[in-house]
Length: 110
Ligand SMILES: [Zn+2]
Image (cartoon, rainbow, N blue to C red):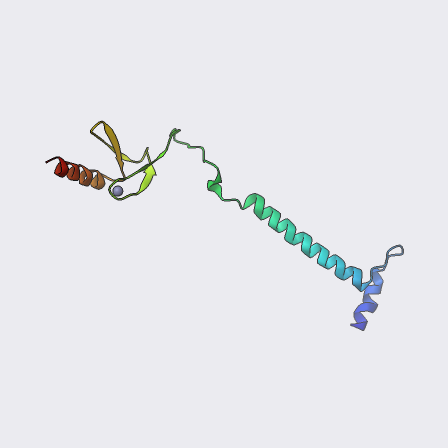
């Protein structure tokens, strides 16, 4: 360590000599500064993308979520398969669910 102090004497400035204490202080200061900058950068760029509604590219302006009454899955209205029944519109994730629903409705009515 003694040789390190002697070699660091080369970096002494006339107005503000750098002692090992100030070097340590600077090291800790820059370390804290780097951590703060890192956290700030993560806060700015690391936000979840779905916090704001993504502008739809394919013209689906009102792409609201609808629930499949058969399997309980939520999906965008544009992708859902609609079924008009008893003056109501039901939406399904697949043709399979739609057929199953219409079959069940027929069973109720019969
Ligand atoms: Zn389904």
